[in-house]
Image 1 (cartoon, rainbow, N blue to C red):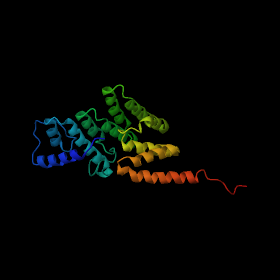
Image 2 (spheres, rainbow, N blue to C red; image 1 turned 180 degrees about the vertical axis):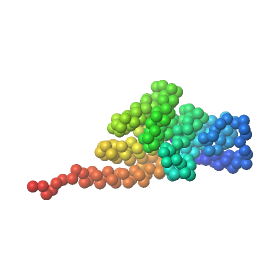
Image 3 (spheres, one colour; image 1 turned 90 degrees about the vertical axis):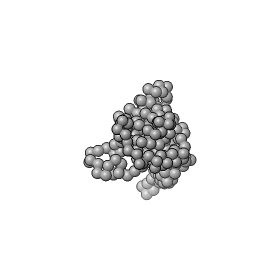
Image 4 (spheres, rainbow, N blue to C red; image 1 turned 45 degrees about the horizontal axis):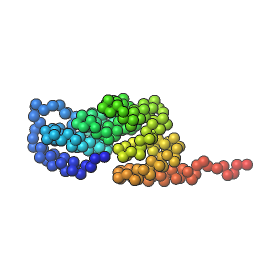
Length: 230
């Protein structure tokens, strides 16, 4: 994943600089962007990739926020969680269509965490149009389709060959590990949790450590022997 330190600095500097300016009427509609002025400034400077990085940071912050505060203080009862997830991802990919990490991250969240496989498939199929020979995209499409049909085994098996890649989001590795754990495939689950410990993403370190301890206990006490059976 791309380094975000210079992006953060640029983001906060621009946020302060442009805070006193109002949005001109003639600007295009970027209503689903929280701070479109900065993005337009990047575009005017020809910095589309930097603009996409900033929007990716916002998406990560958005998805890391509490469910109740995801979009509104009082969302409707039937509203999906994180309703802006798909549109934010589309904005990022409109800025930089080659930003595959953003595509995989958003599609994984939509398909495996938020239960919205149709939106996830749309993101991945758009990627496949740009890169028709991308086997990773094809595998993700298959995994999303199997997951939507209620076949977690085939879903995680489709993802399995790509979980060691550097551009695979930690979130998807964690989801795959948990699926393997639920399927009682402890060795595969443990392998993925150990991989999470090796990645520079402390958000998942505590989860991985907890699950590795649980797996160790499961292996110790299962299957239980009926010692007193006569």
